[in-house]
Length: 483
Image (cartoon, rainbow, N blue to C red; front, side, top):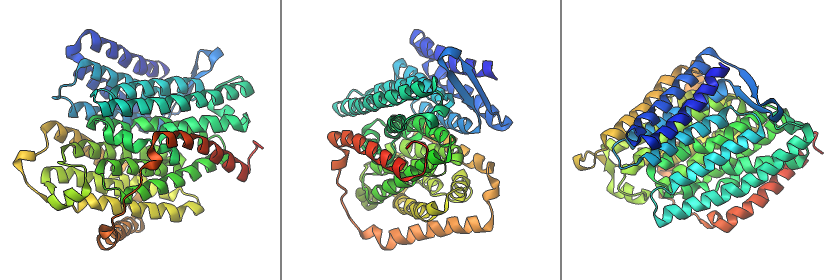
């Protein structure tokens, strides 16, 4: 399995270089890369592997392959495949597909690494490739958003690297386990980097503009899998001890609440999806031990949503409510929306039940309220007027991409089949009904324009300092061995 894992990482890298030598193979090699990852991840999940190994002993490059990483790798493979299929007949050059391959491999590397230095390298490569993909259209707006993303990413990774050095100084190792024996400054600096890169709590306010102004397939990649490169390391850190697990749960609940509050009031559909992504990341971290399955279901559904809205005539929800949309667009939007809500028969239902069943007592009420809020803002899409219009039907490539995503959302519905008991089904239907009633009779008539001042560049940098203080405050008020 060790040799297979090394080959799984190295062979796609070779594909990435071949794309530049033989441009005609670009799409096929990119799609083959995702197929290899699907096979590898299914082998992990079906055989329940739990393997940890080390390379370059003196430097402590360590990797871990288990069910959690298997879910993240599978999400990466399916989301990337859907994006490639979506772009198949578009005028994307070999450079684009080459970067897609490098991004895919870098994400996979981040998902299996368990030492802070290797993770730093993987996250830096992911940041650079994401920058190139965001800037790919070369418009003034895309270049600004790409540079904004790169600058924020580079700053926080310097803090992260400082924290990693402190871990090595305390343990002579970069291994994640060394975090519990390191000074509190190491914890704060490392978590600052991971929280900003992952879009958690107020440090995630860079997400809305980045998602909204990026090209459609890039938005789907960013939301579906790229930001989750920093989420799996947080889950790994939660395994170290109960104190870190509690910190991550607190951040998860806070992130879920923040995201849902913005999403409910947002009228730009792409920005609404961005805030929804922030909220759903909170669900993943609210119950870290089972976050892998939730990552899979959220990544697939959100990728489908972002790909589909590229065919909408406008991003303004008010205009869409007045003018309606094409039925061929409304169907995938609705299917993906009810999946995120956690409606039965989608694997998202099982993932949400599993998450809610693994919450601590103090998390139950706020996370159920967030679940209702999720239903509220997605009913804005589900209840959009629609009619058939042959001139505005979705393309065949989008149909294939969305079909692939929905197929996996339905077929993975057997992973946690224990969720299908009467009480869980009733609760899911009740949450959906409450969300519908609150939207249709109250929030449908409410128009509140959310200020975007907190998303301005200088405020984003300021939030980095505030997150440091917030992390120190959490460490001070919970029982732990750092102080």
